[in-house]
Length: 491
Image (cartoon, rainbow, N blue to C red; front, top):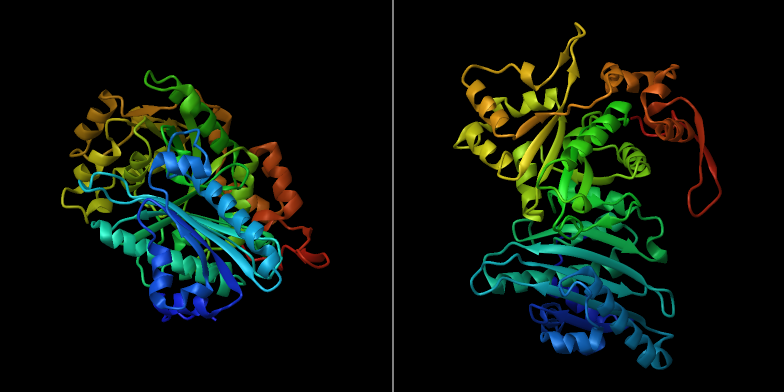
């Protein structure tokens, strides 16, 4: 049972007194903070087989091998550390105590705040561990950003989250969401941000890491999480490092031909920009917490979330989940990940939202303060036209604003910060996503032509978005069971 009142020292002591748990610690970059917590708790000889650090790059490379990227605070370095330390545990101790011991290897590679306080403080932390003697290992890996403004506080936070990770893996493994929540015990999102988590291993076979990413954002542990077309979670600053980011935001429920046309033609136009390297462009489909919760009364429908993600991934999309309602906050986040040009694809309704001054009342500088971030030097909006009820196509030149905002808008147009998507399929402008969803739920004919062919098949085969049909869901483990759409969570 999850007890949030258990302190860090109590957690370390409980592990130290559990004779089944035995392993090694390898910590690079900010001292042996996690191992120190176990030493200070008492009884550490019952838990710690070895602790080590290798701060010198030559020593580190001699132990774990060089990194192709030349960087040391990367997941590949953490993986090499876990491989090396866990294999040594098994090689040296399996015969002696393998029948009664669950081995583990804890590792982190971290860059903490420098003396000048000018660097980005972050790190990779992981635990490879057994839950039963001689059983296959499991693994939980997280990426963190340390936000304290003092090096010593960052080190202390690293020690705490390290203990939380080890304790959670051994005592909360039956509930991965509880394990995730426990990582912040004795901490806060103001001190440390967890922007990626990945569960692997036989005891986590039923865990969907995309859902874990959603929990990170929903619980305020991070503002955004990312995963690739293959469904594997990604660490945003690594996946988008030195990349041009082209982002499409929407409910995407479901993806229609309009969305595909927006993304395709928006990308073509983005690639024509003079300062774009085509080999460095990544297109991202973004789902916000606001949009995910827009159709349910209490929280987020997890099945609906995964349904949307499955479709996006089937189309080869990288997917982001974020808590950014305002576009300027989204751009501020993306600008931290890359220094290259960023493009946002949006429709006229979203452009209207951006120019509504009421959204910026909390900012001292109002709309001008938000626009200083949103329309920074390397950001451009690509606007897809809208079909008005009278049949007229509404574009950027038709955009109507209050007189006090019109000069601001003209300035942005003149300086190439906002542009129409000029090549588009006019037939798609008649498609309404809300109408498509209504037709899907009602089982009406004709909606299939309004979505990509592969999307229609996925919706029908899996009874998504309330489509009336029956589908076989094979839970693992156990026999298959028949579940109708009416039994599934309502979309």
